[in-house]
Length: 353
Image (cartoon, rainbow, N blue to C red; front, side, top):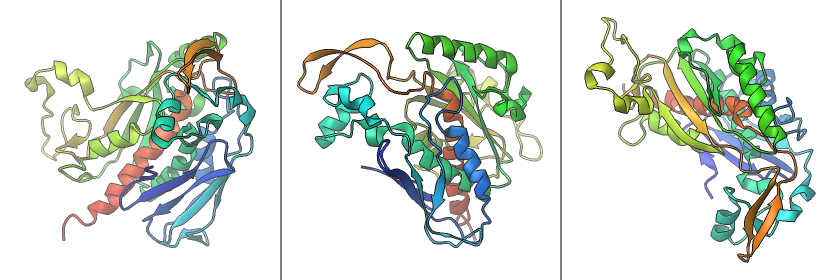
């Protein structure tokens, strides 16, 4: 099982949704970085369950405990070990499906691949794992202090925020529970999520992420292009079904004369359909991309499936689940973006003499 992300700035994680704890080890963080531990906890608080009426009501403090690699508030260069205890498991909520394969979950594939699975909350396949990524991402953000990374909810179902990111005030992202930086759209999105929750159903959406104040040179051709690594990270998030950067799929409908980003005399570009990446390398313009999330697979309504013996069965989801994962995934997208950029930040220091 692959449990690591990154090359120089590297995170390796452990733990299950209903185990004693989750946690990780961060390798490659340079010595001497003064860490704001309160800022790290604040990032975890953005992701934690139970924070609003439109997310799962599981109550977890998500309090991180650092075990190594930090002394007198600074990184030592050694591995940074940390744990986050699970304190509000309700494993009995899942006993009814221990021998049943839920549609569009990892139940079937994990069982066939490994011969068994931890059915309590999905075990290792649970999005509970993403709390580990938040810790590493929060440290990566502090390593990349000059780069500003902002993600926000850009759609829920068929409600799309139809404004370019340049016209948005990122300071408003945390002003509402759906994390949309436009109040009128946020109200519509929240209403739609609550309607889905009332029906025992779920809904998907998209998150847009923008990285500003980008240096030139992040990215390693041929097989470690910056957009390829960002795509890999985003597609590692539970429920993600798509990734596009710059003009994305809309670029496929354009002519070259429309799509080319013409240069200014200082090397910046007049447009930015490239999304801040050319030849797999950052060009100093804003990096922006969008991530698509499917509806949560666990439904609080009856549906048909099969048991591990192939017998048909009708079940109904129990427990505490997100009717829409998008709002809580916003800090996860930011964290993984920071981790990828931190990895390239360190790697870029070896590019030339």
